[in-house]
Image 1 (cartoon, protein in one colour):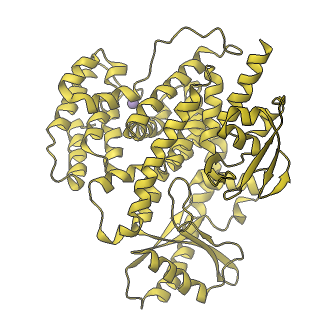
Image 2 (image 1 turned 120 degrees about the horizontal axis):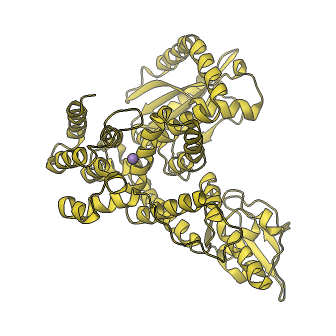
Image 3 (image 1 turned 90 degrees about the vertical axis):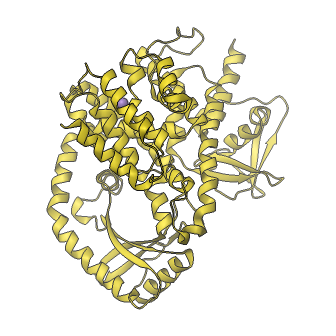
Length: 500
Ligand code: MN
């Protein structure tokens, strides 16, 4: 493994999108990291510095800025070597040092809190503390989470060198926390590879069989999708606007989940390839949709307009499934180049935006992108808010998982204020989101002026009104009805206090 050649590749990748930068700090960081980690090897036998180099390379592919690349090269220095923080600070400044600190795991722990329910293992406490720490650092600088995800991606890619127990433990944490986090940040590319790699270690047999099957049907599928692409191209060829068509294969993990969910054999999964049409503006997305649907019959209820209603991770696209031949259907996704970039890179795309490295044609979606960036920071701040309310690390991790898994819904108060809740939330969640007392005294709820049961799942756009009665109190079974960490911790808090 030629370290200098790897570093050269990194420099070349960065120069492409950072033509104006002075790369001196990056060069210094490489030399520094090489020296600091000189005595260490990766589990596979490579010099340790290959790892920070690989992480920086992943980030360069996402076009992250120079301080992030520099921090990537140094990211394990505080954790794994004797270099003190002050030295980093003096040599590389506060911006880079702060990012490195954010991803550094803590090894010394505060003594366990005697008040917590049950006693979680040291392992759980450590894991929870490290997550807390990363979330705090991220709320100040969101690049920390992108760095952490790139770090995890490379560790998953080199997991074969660890013991089976470690593999299992790391893969389990990856699938339950890191992959959902990547999804929430909209970084599809990292999410998909984290999921596929976790599956490889958690379900090795299924993964192996699956890979073989996909490989076997790939050629046949490739032929088929090429035929479809030609048909769509023929429809669009006379249009004066820019467009390009590509085929997309679903990730192994998403197919695996689909087969589990639908209980179908692999052979019956028709849509593991989809077509994607990229164009320049939002108007042209709808134009493409119109042209395609005038020629091919859409499968009923298959149309989703994520342009008008973006997902909470900012994903935008038009989805339609069409009957392309009498026996075959195919999903077509239509989006602008800019939407495509966000779909692949999510929050990481923000840095390209900041650098002004985007073409003029992308203007229509520039605004939501910025808003969403602030939303992402909001999300971290919210998580930090409710984590203050629980001092049990095991509960903290559980809640974090829940928070990551679900999308958001927006529900209105009678006054017209918007309350953001997790998908699957009930009126009890809604009540606690407004005020603890409103939750504690809740006896009933109206949704859109109709009385509903307290286990009713709220949808975006619902208007909810809580009815209270003096002297009421929460019920223990509410813990099964609520989705939001906030409501859960308030209910627990009530019982903790009254049982004392
Ligand atoms: Mn690392």
